[in-house]
Image (cartoon, rainbow, N blue to C red):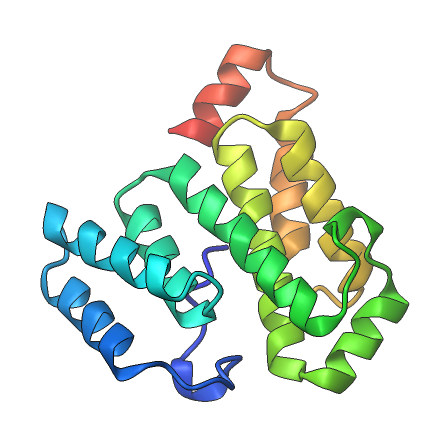
Length: 177
């Protein structure tokens, strides 16, 4: 649900990270919780706006700071970057199983990352009260991940259980707090 399930050594970072950017990320980690950390992460993002390690670091920062709108924006960027690298359609809404299969042939790790980011963005949309967007993303995830290895079905099940029985205000409280 938050792109945190990955260890850098097993994943999608096939490209090298410039040592100066790596130092910025390490410094941001050392300064976590301060305004300085965000400044360092943003600087890294300006230097390497399409590097997945930078995007994940920035996403994590916003997610753990409970800045969910910012985390969603970064997640959407990561989705676009990974999708382009995999040769996916510009929008996740047009992604089909055949596209995913071709993407897996390019990079299994990156395809798995894409699905995890799709789940993350779906979850964040739900938390922010964007129920239609969140539902659509989770439904797309389940369509692409028919064996539910990413765990999207549980989130969609919770949404479906809460939607018919509660009014909008109660639903918003459940997902956004």
